[in-house]
Length: 149
Image 1 (tube, helix red, strand yellow):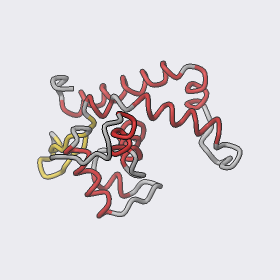
Image 2 (image 1 turned 90 degrees about the vertical axis):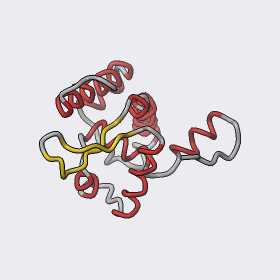
Image 3 (image 1 turned 60 degrees about the vertical axis):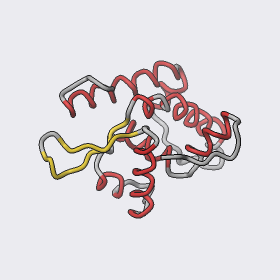
Image 4 (image 1 turned 120 degrees about the vertical axis):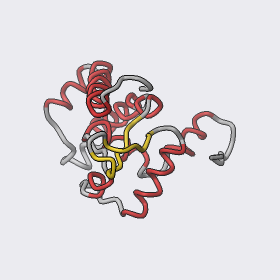
């Protein structure tokens, strides 16, 4: 797959891939909310349309951010999993959540607050590390292997 970029700037190039309103939402759902099946994503509160979801999952797969595989215990069911490239987006998601907590809470007071946000506020690096560790453990349990991730 050849992706079209607007220019050679690394910041703009990253936004050409991730700047779409759904891309990081899907990664967040996988990393934080344990979404892994198409149906899981369609039932989320973000309410992504199925045609858009299909297109975004395909693009994320083409970019190497996720892989599509079969469930080990049900070869008919597809499973979407983050790759190392996808997991490398964890610090970006953490920074977006930090920014949102700090600068959007006054205009959107319903933003989630609680134990996880407190940990995020106190130690972003530990929060990001814990997210990645939890996902890798889930991945290993799901695939019964640690190779390739």
